[in-house]
Length: 286
Image (cartoon, rainbow, N blue to C red):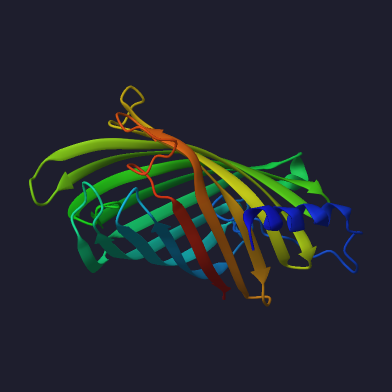
């Protein structure tokens, strides 16, 4: 299904009659694709998450990077959730300018995330959640080379119910400063990513959502904003399906439609980012 058709299907839900039967509470955390909803789970909820994040395509050659992550999530108190993640990465690189050819699978470190919901949709027109995610990585995200990478992603997630039990929208802001040491040369680098994303999704049937999102990213050579390196705009479709009370699957696909890198001509930024981004996530509550 093309992006145009996917969006058309999602927007068509606006004209559908209200869902029959008793409304079921919607947990918005994963219904928007890459964009995060503001919900953090019910008090005492435990969840296992298996997620695959793929990045594909550079300016030339063949490029595939996959991250498979296992995460354990728990909400020990109301409006608070913490998560521990263990990622494994796969890189397949051949003939890409400025990158070494590489075929490898590697354990990629640890991440720890805490999210606190400041207020929910019952207390106002929208819900708002802040998140902090320290992370340590052993593999460079783009090149796959061995590194020691330390960073912390700060996020702000807001969502709202546009049409009761039917259409939802979300907005995310993120800032991710990082410090990286190359194990090959011993040199240190500082970099930062600044991003904003927006998404909307429609519940076509109880527990079945289709939507679309847009993500704008800027990258800097430093932890501040004084050494701009490039930017990129991604758009694409999203889906979420609750298969049972305890099991759900979600997916998203983004394609870069505009961007630019410093000292690199062209209408896309395939130096700092990739042409395609894809996400597949399975969550199980217990």
